[in-house]
Image (cartoon, rainbow, N blue to C red; front, side, top):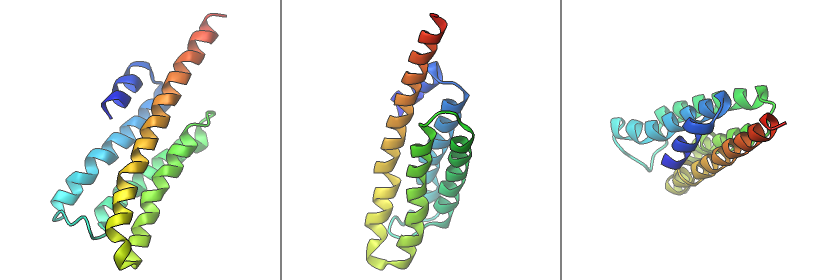
Length: 131
C-alpha cells in the first residue's frame, strides 16, 4: 500500500490518483467498519458491502470514462467483494473463507495494476515529451 501511495502520488495523473484514493479509503475503511460493527469477521457486514459497492461504482465510472485499459481490471477486481457479500450471505460455510479472500488478496492485485499503470503512464509521458 505504501509503495502504491508513493508511486501514484509522485507520478500519477488524475485517474491514477482517484483510483488510489478509492482503494485507500476502501482498505482503511474495511477494518474500521468491522471494529465499529462488533468485529465479527465471520458474518457478512452491510457497512462493508456499502463501502465496497461505492468503491465499485467509482472505479467502474473511472473505467468507462478512461481511454486507458488499466481501470477495467481494477473495477472488475472490486466487483469480487461486492459479489462475495451475496454469496457469503447465502452459504453458512462460505462466510469466513469467502470474505477473507475477497477482502484481502484481490486488493493486492488492484494495487499492483495501479502501480504498473502509473509507471507505464510516466514512461509514455517521457516518450511523448521527448518528441
